[in-house]
Image (tube, rainbow, N blue to C red; front, top):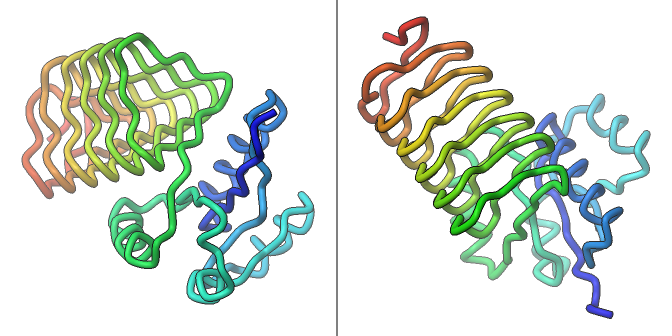
Length: 215
């Protein structure tokens, strides 16, 4: 039997606890992992209570966790903001910590698809064939990623969003819930697509678009 890996989640808020859901589902299906707890620099009292209610340990802030030998456990970044994720990864990499890739058992992943370290893919999502997903990308529940798409490092695909075939989502870009990106488009680095939008043309880096069609 393979030894179990200790895994912690960084972030006690919504996506952090959704990441716990993914890890718990993986463990139920026999993945060799043990959830050690949650690390968060400034958790709210409400979120601490939510952790207690599900019997998950709060392990303190990131600095204290690293100083106490946290490198022995791998981490999942349960932080929704691409900007914050990128900042934290630099700090964690410099400290020698290692990321964990979390894929819910109820996810479909097609052939010839590559996943970067630290990716989190939530329940009900579909990732088609020949997709390339970079480091620390979040694919939220029930999202669809079409064939030959590329999701660059730290991008976020929010719940029920549809990324059509041959689309490139740039580094740190965020696609809002239920948004649709039409085929063969490019979403620039750091761009933000509003919830429910339909994107019919390329989005330049750093630009915010919303609406139907998105402008």
